[in-house]
Image 1 (cartoon, one colour):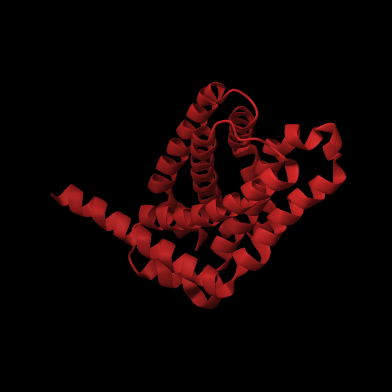
Image 2 (cartoon, one colour):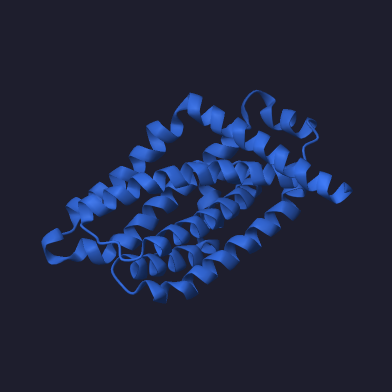
Length: 232
């Protein structure tokens, strides 16, 4: 019974943290005013830069989609920890006594929600502008879910590592990009199979994305509390 109460408490605390971050973002409108337009500009620039008549856009659409999501992830992660630096918010959050794993899950969930909303808009933009066909909608959706969880979990974990550093805006990409290379590779390959290829070929890549997401979510829940204290 105690274990069940603890588990419920962690998820309740995570929901509180996620709700706090999402309310802040909704009021500040950073995601709507900066991150979303940034992602759209990326796919628009590639649409103009490449020749659609030669079919280049259709072939590179999965990679361009995830590049745009990756850049948006860096902005979202940086923003998630920047909001804790104002008016002693980080110290206030520490003094609430919330479980470190719950804080991790809450902040990762808030980032994942923002990325998911971005991906929906970018996905529509890619289909309209690049003229791609969706052969396996189920594979595409599952890939997006697994990759988004992996990006959010990894970004939250490395975001707290960089939070206490003076050059965190510069160091965060250097820390994060090498680690999420498997996500970018797996998501791109799975999207290629789900969009214009054979959807059944995407399952091994989807498996890699799922394992990656589970590993980094587990590490984050276990280690975030100590990292959060050291970054304060």
